[in-house]
Amino acid sequence: VLAKKKAIEQLIKAANAKIDQLAFFPSYRHFKINGLSVCLKSGHGNKLSSPVKRYIQNLLKLNMEGPYGSEWQEEEKVKCREMVDPEARYIFVHEVANSNADDMSTTKLTEEDTSTSCQEDSGPLVGFVHYRFVLEEDVPVLYVYELQLDPCVQGKGLGKFLMELIELIAQKNCMGAVMLTVQKENLLAMNFYMSKLRYIISATSPSKVNPMLEKSYEILCRTFDDEAKTILEDSE
Image 1 (cartoon, rainbow, N blue to C red):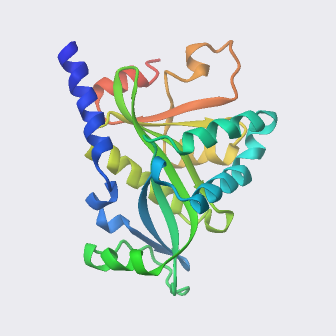
Image 2 (image 1 turned 60 degrees about the vertical axis):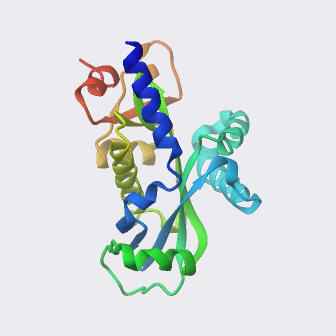
């Protein structure tokens, strides 16, 4: 048991030690479809610039104040603390200058194409993913804290593309699952994760642990191995 625990701790430590998770997936540094062209960059919670912090706070408020309702004032403070945690890992989405608005196909560029274009041509931020490598019920998981996109880039397949990348990062780092929390009131997000991406309500979600205890959120998951499936999925 102790050896297994130590091995899991080493897995998480090794995942956190990698500076740029995108380096393993160069073809995912770029996304282009229906006139939208963006590039992705990695980031860390303890290395965020002041403008990036303000952007994150503003986008969170824009997208989440409605779903959280009366809980938002307190939740906003929590999210601000989480935002700059040393364990916070980010994928930042930047618009790319001079994108071809007539290009109607999704394009994942080669490593040679992306190595310089994202650095030189990136424009303003239009979204981000905040994730962490953590332990849930003794299972190493990649936990998505936030996936937030500007309204102007929503509904174009970018969210699905980012979650596809997140799952690849999780499996590359030998995580047992991807997990995330969604507000029940956020019907668009619930539909996105459960209907489009086929995530399921985890056995660790409040509605499964104690259905009598009404909570405003669900915990969703996608597992990658039998042990994670047994622990994190509902066995009904």
